[in-house]
Image (cartoon, rainbow, N blue to C red; front, side, top):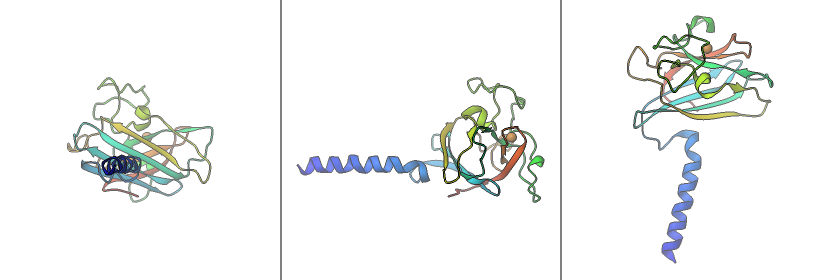
Length: 180
Ligand SMILES: [Cu+2]
């Protein structure tokens, strides 16, 4: 009986642990972590955590406000350069694309030469608008994000969110660490 209770308790605790993992990654083994935090017209965070296996990066996207177009979809990408002090998102260059794959071309993540490393919405879907008081949450694994090589690392870049019409809306730098 005690054994059975122990097993039940173990199962229960495992279930709770599993359901709480995505919020803080606290027990994910990792080698690199980074975040982009949006604090202007758009508020939210994108957290990147390379898996301990180094074969993919866990990405958790959370937005709290600013994506107000309920009928539109917002593209977002990792752009080449950090946001300058002026905050001007137009100065962040193009999408991070060490392979040279061009902006705007359809993304085929199955083909290494047919996607952009930085095209997060091309690979994982655009973000829908949402009503005030709601939270937008997305979580996915991306095997194409790189960390260590200066040519293709996501460190020191920025994330740009585009209006549904494609113009740049909000941007935030990618820093090492974790954002709550
Ligand atoms: Cu972009």
